[in-house]
Image 1: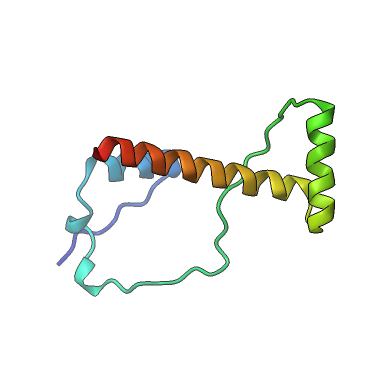
Image 2: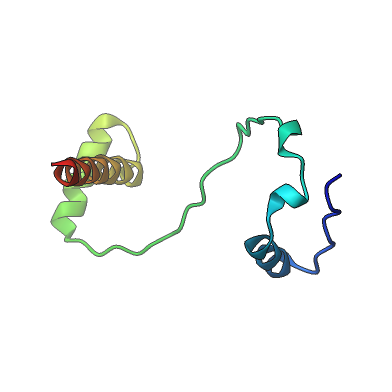
Length: 95
């Protein structure tokens, strides 16, 4: 029989509790079921980015030709480059 989960005053208290206790003493994980959360979206953080007007205008021109918002295009470009560099780094480490 699992131990009862205590009531927490706030998230910080709960976070501290789970950081210092084994969840298997409080839950029967063999009874767990996988769930799909289709509407869960990753958290986004707004940032400020300085770039030349020329670069921004070029980006907007490309985005306009592709019929996408320029900020979305920036995220695609960044994602592609991050993936490329991380893959290169992993390949280098494996050698």
